[in-house]
Length: 238
Image (cartoon, one colour):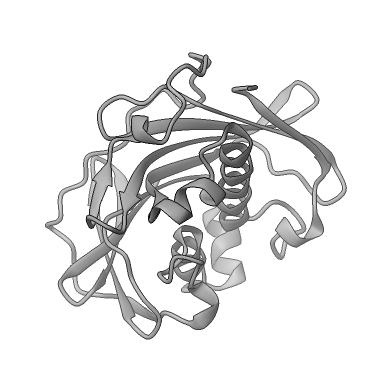
C-alpha cells in the first residue's frame, strides 16, 4: 500500500471562482475528495466502513493558499495520513505546480459509529502497519477556540437539499460554501482570504438555519455558525 497518494491533472475550470483561479471553497472540496479516494485505496474508505455503520468525520481542516492555479494548468495533488494517536488522526495535503508549492492543507479526523453514537478509535479502522510519512505541511497546531465572546448574529443561511451529503447531514465543505455566499464577489476579491481553518462541532440538517456571529481573538477573526444555541462550527480567518 502506498501511504502517499498523488494525482496529476489539468486544473479543472469547475474549481475556479469568478476570478478564473482556484476558489477558497474549492480547495477544501479538492482535498476532501483526495482524502476520500486515498482512504478507499488503503482499505478504510466508505465502501468498507458504511456496512459497519461507521464513517469518517472531519474534526478540523486548515487550508493555506500560497498561489492560486488557473484552469488548465498542470498541477499535482498529494496527500498522506499520519499514524493515529488517541481518538483522532491527521492527514496532510499539498498542491504543486512542478516543484513549486501552491496550496497546503491539514485535517483532523475521527471515526463515528452510528450504532453507538460515539467516536471509535481510529486504529479500529486504520491499518496500523501502514508506514506513514513524518512530513507535515502546516506545523502550527490547530487553534483552541472558546465558545464565548461572540457578538450578535450578522447573517443567516438556511440549509438546502444541495448541502446534504450521503450521511444525511450538511457536507463539511458546504459550510464553507455557505459562509462564502454571505459576501459579494467584490468583497471576496478585496479580502483575498488565503488561510482558513474550520472546526466542526455538531451535525446540521436540511431546513435548519445557521446564524453567523464573530469575534477577534489574538488578531484572528473567528466566525461561529450555530443553530439556536448549538454550535455547528467555527471558521478562523488569518
